[in-house]
Image 1: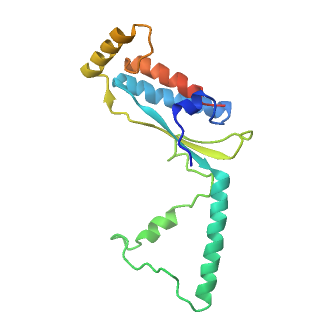
Image 2: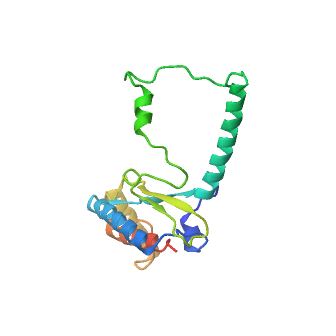
Image 3: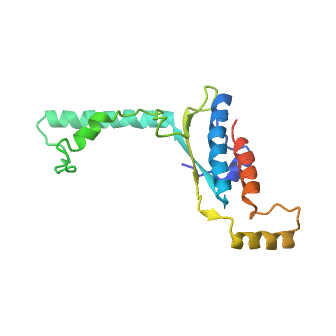
Length: 185
């Protein structure tokens, strides 16, 4: 599968297809997180966007069920399954069965909104059914003396009006939010 970079979004080769309401909810969450990072004087973070292709997942699930049905038929014919796992799962008397009984398997395109707070389904008019999983990454770079010196040196070299990468956390946050708000279709 392709890996997209920010230029793919700038050139309109890739978009995130969500409703206006979902975009607003996402941007509210993102704004709160970005404001928190600004208060900590953090910069150089990125948005990681995972795109789950629901149609592909459904096809793969169907193929998996066909393989599983073939394996069940072999077992019924007296053949042993190809791989049997024997072992202990933790110290709990219920073992992994206790965990599995409390866990509801999710199908293609489904997610738990309490766990996946940045997950959003594509809207009905999207080119294909997708679920977008988004999160902030690289949140450890602080705007310290080294970054301030880099900003000053780049400003001297390129001029005060030039767009440079090392900027104050407030400027970085604005540029980041402006870019993210434009990736939506």
